[in-house]
Image 1: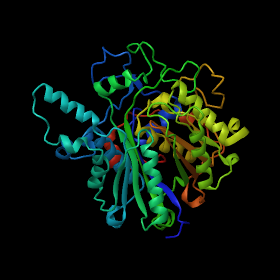
Image 2: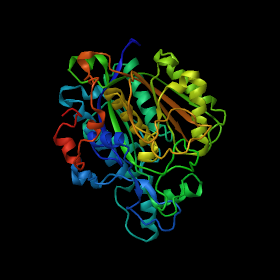
Image 3: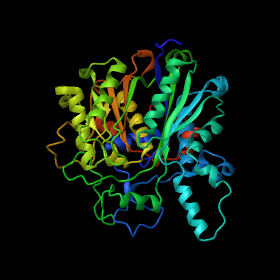
Image 4: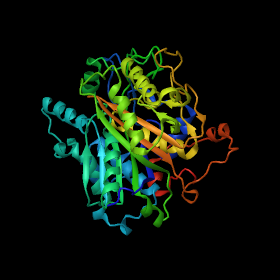
Length: 452
């Protein structure tokens, strides 16, 4: 198969702390709203950290038959919901496609670990375990449940390489379409890590930002001088990746094109990134080469930006080393202040947000950045988002264990396949339009395309 096959994105679906439909997610993200609040799903009085990006107002049975939903874990609920929304958003008629020639590619870091710990708690209390405990806890369930929901019979894989699992899943999906006879891949990532044992383990590892029982609310603080650690999150995101000619033949709306990606490994530590930033830099440089871009062509970087003391400085260094003086002219923003760190799902949020930034020529802000750090001296779009001319963007996804993945996305080039944003658009007015509460069921029963 020719290596000239182009890979485009034609559908998006999201379950997030800022809403469980695409329109609400983007609207609140651009307005600078935060989904970080005290955890409600379990008691947190014994922890120094009680904030999280928790998904609220989500009912799995809006997407999945109740009997099937009872057999699944929360992470699979999120994955299936996001996939159904993405397929709907892509106007994809699966009955008209060769389901044996489609593929599923999903990422998750901890999979059903939440259900595994819950089962252990039941065992200690000498309660009966749920009969589907094992299948609900397998990382494999994330992609398998999506395949079951969609009836897809092609390759079906779950990638689990830490926080960069979703970027890896999307990169592998890109490779499938580029090099083989696969025209469609449903790709994304899901995470549901909010459980007392997982929170306790993260706190023991000194990775969480202490919020002193929620008395400190402006957390996390990516790239800020006072940054002190991460805040956990959860959710899922999914994209429909499609071979360009296939998308054109069926008249699909093309959001963006994935032009290349790269993967490097620090081979240094499970918990700490390599201080030199050399492998992050190499991932950026290799992604640029794969996409055939010059550094000066990059117009936006969606950063990993965890809010950790070490990684934020290292990521800044890597961007500057890879892009030279141009790094100071490029807007760089992190979503973690709004959504928390949802492990693999964070990569899904990044991809969807970047696609919409390319589509609507707008950069969401980095929240809670109020005190500049001399070591983090790029344009991080603090506080308020802004319109920007963006044709090409990079996504940095750096995970525990030193797994560094960078994706290169460009705006859809065909005038027939994209909706152009008017040059005189009233951005303040567009972002102040009142939005109703997110109703997950409407994402399935009504088309969620942002222009609808």
